[in-house]
Image (cartoon, rainbow, N blue to C red; front, side):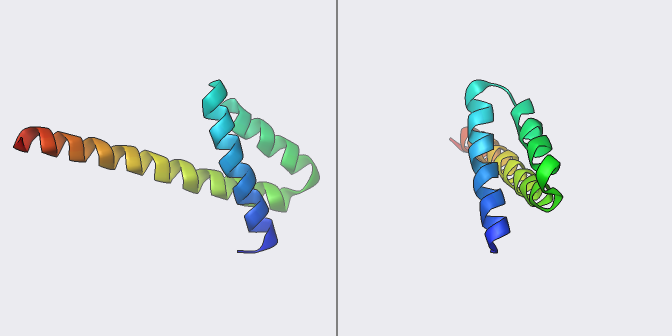
Length: 75
């Protein structure tokens, strides 16, 4: 990863963590707006990391649910 991608991903990871901790998912877009005001390139990298991390989170939740359901049926 480039420095830009590393920084954007680190910020994305921290923002997701804090947004869910405080129960304010709009924080993700608020941070994006702050980035966009000074660096659209950084904003794009951040939003890409956000999308990837949230998609992975949803997929893991889906996987966990499917496995629990399969285990419940078989046992």
